[in-house]
Image (cartoon, rainbow over all chains, first blue to last red; front, top):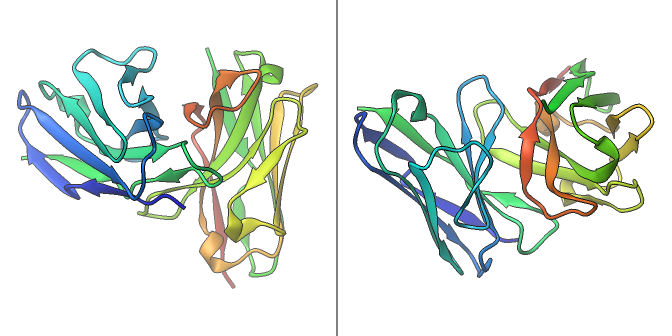
Length: 108
Length: 122
């Protein structure tokens, strides 16, 4: 089973700042990595698939990069609605599909 | 618009059974693989099971094999998760999620329901 490790666990930033979130895989997942956003009491929402492709309706301030074992989600300029928990997920080696433990992006 | 609405959650004793449903609308249900993903209270996400668009191929995470089954009724646009032998560690919000790929399964999830809470406790 592929283990995904996200860092940092918590990221405290202010609106307008740039956010950089990391996800490291225990073995290569190629480009088969997705990112999700989850707000309290809500279901997750797909942001990025295949490492760098924005899902339908996702603003351009969200971008993904990386391949192999190291991936990054960048939010170029934080909006108030971006403060949430972010999960990465791999689909390279399954079953099972696996998720990272999440990064909590909080307002500083 | 795409809508997924789960139901059937509740409180059940250890060893008990429960059937979850997920009613789909706003898209051609027959064309998409469907998944169940769960989230224990305050914890991360765990993929549970997938069923292909035609119902012929199914996979499960190891911890639920032999206890959970997944099925679908394409005539009713509904996905199911039959759970038996429930354990306290199965306590979670259960989400149904649509696979991103049409006529196949690619393994990421582009639409999610709001979830239904299953609590296993005596």
